[in-house]
Image (cartoon, rainbow, N blue to C red):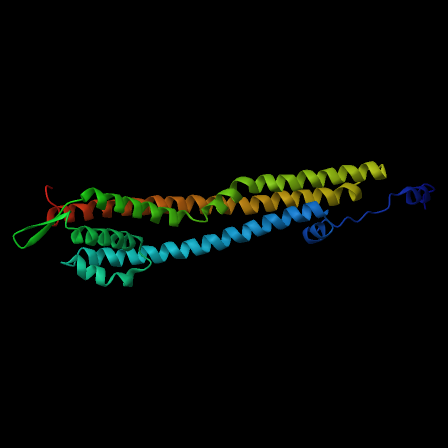
Length: 246
């Protein structure tokens, strides 16, 4: 046996075991970092819940719109279409039509806005109908945009909330270094681990929120085009058949 073997064994550095498991890091993280992670998790759950509910709402609306528009172009009477309007409760186009039909009914019942040419009543007050269509469309778009602010807020603030947790975790590591006078892995690893977890969860909450937000905004813009096209078609039909001077 070498005479230096004993010296090597005696001077060998003891093995240091540092547990950097994510769950353990979160469990032993500072209260501030844990609160930060909780906020991010709650925001992420809200975003996925909103994303699912919006996806189902858009799917139902698209199917109902297709059915309503098919019926709209086939019927010969607006009265007949209005009688069946409750069959298309999920259709935003049907709701716009309902608002316009009710306005036309008010106009037709007003003696100041109605006159008769032969056996056919002729209406005036087209501006009123145009305003109702515009307002109904804006209401539908506003309804579609509801709760998207949560997605936008999470997408824009998620990384910064995670960064706050990161900075706080690193500050904790420096404080431990100052208290122990050692910069060993056992001292700094727990704080660095919780800091990186905060960054990761911040990104995990923000990225899906941004993707969902952009996707829904694109769908809303397409739906707005559908509504505007319907408004133009509806106005052309009623101008030819019901309103005077057009």
